[in-house]
Image (cartoon, rainbow, N blue to C red; front, side, top):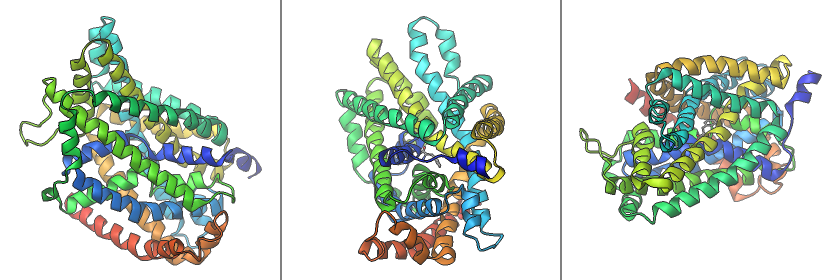
Length: 453
Ligand code: PHE
């Protein structure tokens, strides 16, 4: 195992770890998923339920993942095995996480690849290459999808081969501040446009008439996805931490940052839709009367809005918006790939470079298949995201609460946070991870299955 341990790596600084974990959390889920879910599900009503899911379920589970990871210093499979007392069922939680990671990454890459095509579109149009620009934004073009997906995969693999501190930490440290600046710039601009305040009103006014079971299912699924929970991404990132880091404080920063970016992204996208409407773009589905959502919103309405602004400004804004989306996706895709890569490094003593290219190659094959058949995205989202991640979260909280036991987890959390076990926060966490999280997740999962079946 000596060579494998040498390949593991660790974070260089406290800030570096927090940014990397926040980078994993902030992604397409925040800038693409969250605003469209808000548009779909009654505006601010969804935001409120979402906040409850993040704070009451996501945050306690994040502390649990980090504690498991740091305690064992292993990938999710190795971590659960190390704490299993020889029970062969326990490592299955880790295997499930690795599988979800592989599958989520394969569709995530396809969507991330679209951002590259759209970033280039305006520029190509401007230079007179309209036909090429049209091809790059044609979501139905499988070959084009596959090429951009593979380019995105290449970036992801190259960062992972650099290792934990020199690859992941360094890349996210550069990209996260850029992402924030771009987001604020875009919001600043959108609010100078006609129609933005109308969109803002829709965004902040709750419509509780749309509240139902499926809204809560969406909110919890979105919370797990956005916070990168339930599949061991944070077990893996936690395994590169030293015992000086305060896990509770780190989890709080990451959760807060992720929520903030989602809310801010909504503050840009929903008003941008109404700006688009003022520019003559249809933003309501003629059949249902509802706001356009998901793919149509981000890859159709928004490009049209940038076009309607016309000239150089529309071109630049469109370009930076899609670069923003691409950067956010990249800091997340590296964490998705790192989970199976760390598993291969630890369990088979394989070098990081070989592991990254090998696992990356396998995921690329699945991603190319999805590039040609986009209906698989919905299927994968339903299985691995909407069911898979909450299921992972349920197993993690049950494992921690009843198998590993909160007393033992507390000994780990105490390192770097000596006062936590005796504090109110500590007691509240125990209640949440043992009772509230499993019960809430189980209720939502049953609801999900009822909706799916
Ligand atoms: N959190 C990422 C996003 O919001 C996606 C992700 C899910 C990353 C699970 C890692 C693990 O886009």
